[in-house]
Image (cartoon, helix red, strand yellow):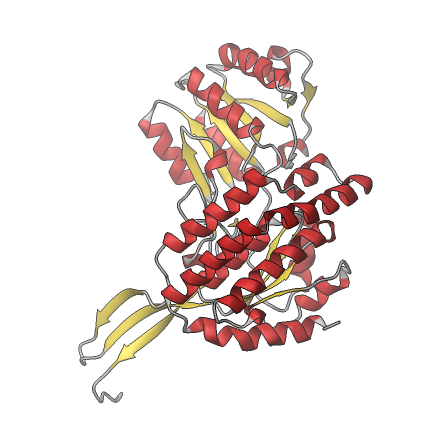
Length: 415
């Protein structure tokens, strides 16, 4: 079996052709991926069923089982994502800025691929296709390391990627897969600074912390989602109810699901009992501060740790706050800077929330569930970055490029 270093070296060598590939060639490649994925869906679902059976036997949590599952609807979503990426402009070669200098030189900034991306991810086999498509369209080669729980699914999906690469006239080494459940491979992968330009981890806090502590390759982190919805004193309460319910219940295992509900003290007595009954009817467990527990029967006491925690399940912590300033302060202190929303009819309150909440995505009168590359028109996403360098929020095609200076002269020399 090839070592991680050998695979990384092959990806690096193959990446040169992608760097200069035309949009037409890259789009044709992704269309072949979509066709092969559709044609091979029965085999993909069969391999995923093996992973699901093994995961259930090993006691994987319901959250992780949901992330692991593939079905026809999710395959359709993956294919739709591929077609969306095909429809998007190619960012490579885009000139973002042009300056004419007094000496006659023209200085431009041009988008170029990052080069070779290493992505380390847990459970979600759809990432194999989404990440590969975004990387290839933006001129990047890719080294993948999925979790052991999804190894059969990922192996099959990478096989489809390689078939499409061959069919489209590219080296199949443009996408490589570290086909082992051995966790030691992760440590070896993050040391490949000679071949990899960036590492993007997608997983839990333990995985991300391990990579940050051990990587010699630059890392762009996909952080936890301790997301908030704040119901302001003047909120349309029916709208607030729908937004809170969607943000918490629609898919509680994902990172943009709401984990905390903050409610203005001026509307809590009217809103919270109704909201709590609807949440409890959907199976949501509620923890709360003292005032919440007075208004919501059977709610448990929220601890200091609860305000910091990403539940990723049908649980929510609720706090009654004095108003907008306390809500913003609470979110910035306890949140993970991922996705946070306000429900309000006040334009001034909404604008203040947008300006002052320090998160990758902030929303006025919309569910946090929309913080997603597909929903934002990016086709798909490599991850949702919660850091500030080099990208923040859903990472689409442009976020997988860098900028270089291009200078055009006519014989100028510096004096």
